[in-house]
Length: 338
Ligand code: SAH
Image (cartoon, rainbow, N blue to C red):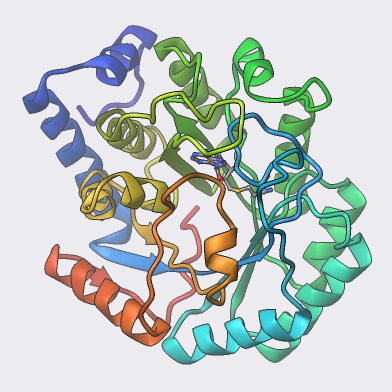
């Protein structure tokens, strides 16, 4: 199963297989491939959801601008730095600033924020996930100290992309941003949801082929989960099994990629994240946003959350990862091995 090249038919076969023995073999091959490059090490990222204001209107997303039911929030620089301090003390060496496309954060403000974090934590990696921005902005963020950028392509099939987004959002623009980010020198993350309305196996095949072409450093893959008060509120959630197979296929096609076991998987299944590690993922991104923000960054319904003190939550997570037979590498930046 570990092979140099895959035909479309072979990929489609594993995207759609309902044979659980075959799926198991796929997971094992992906895990083995991961271990050739990363061993059983799992990297941790401190996720900070810094704003849920968004100017976009993606049909699937709970924080889309036309959802008037969403209570909006925006963390202050001091609140964000406080999350970084907590994360750093707990041993995280990567901060991920994720948010809606919030125009309040002008290029200048976003760069100032990155610069402040970089100055206080010069040894930590900074990842930004703030959507589509200009090349000038991306370059300025990079120069201010950001190392990585996450921008899921969501779907690389033109018609499917158009079925998930309003006409103002263009797949061509998304692809251009990803290319620009790579050119600037960011460790770049693409990715997609599994099971969004109107998605076909051929869409998923196209997503895999796109990843092969782009060669991103990171790929986020999670199941679609319906969000209240959105056009897709009444569509069914994506399948955990298909998501896991897509994680494995991505690992086999891009052996050195960093693959998170996503919160969305953890939301649909109690053991979703452990299963994802078993299927070839090697990153976990615990949410260190302050209580209040965590509940309100409601991109989908029933998003996994915790009420414990954050230190307890993180040590519980580390225990779970160890119990599943992995080695949590707190204290490591966990850069991609390209
Ligand atoms: N504005 C940023 C961050 C978006 S939130 C950006 O555009 O990159 C991060 C990811 O959550 C999105 O890229 C999307 O793939 C995922 N997401 C949004 N709504 C979702 C839903 N209903 N179910 C599952 N994942 C969702």
